[in-house]
Length: 317
Image (cartoon, rainbow, N blue to C red; front, side):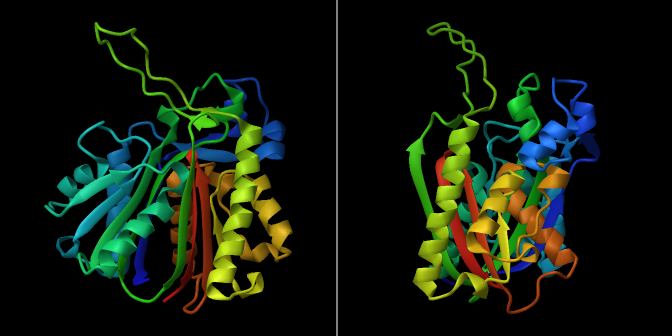
């Protein structure tokens, strides 16, 4: 492990959509949404592109770390869908930064930030890079069925970013994929090929009960593996940064560990589930409000479609 985070950034669309506004679009209510998810509102793109969000988050991260864009050796973007199928979102951001370094996307769904840290650590530890830009950017509103109240109330748009450099902050990192495509998926369709049936692109589909079950069991595995690997107790962790999918899942984790509320910061109530961007956006919020101190132990855990999941432990530097 040879990585530390030296700067963070984030960007959210301007438009706020409240639960009350959603109740005019689908059969739902503020009470129904809050009771099941803890979400009160979310930010939704109108004029902004996903490249806009990713670029602005990147600029903030660069400024926060005191890094010049030309010092970057790699750009890694986590997203379930860019403005283009090809080239990658990382290439689009690199173009705006006037760079020519290697740039690529990965799709590990909501676990993308952990997977991106894993990639960055591998590149830094093998001396292939000394400064890497990670961006997690999602425009979930483009993939949501706005007639399905079980999913459209959950998601929001946004981007979070960080600069990774050589350091000793990363103490543990673990990723896994159970390889399941049925519980949570978004079908691509096949365009207008004359040689096959014309299947339009689908919308995000989810078995909510199965996702909840997977989320809580994945968290329990993550905690056990991490604490055993580096000989820590759950009380040694100062801040738990969990994927902001649903307040009930976060409350389950807190109760399971019997740890105080203040160790589990959230912003799901304000922004909803922004897939892989949720953890880096929350991390940036905490950093900018001076809520993370040098030496604090952070536990990050995420889960997503695939079924992907991952966790890491960082000692903040």
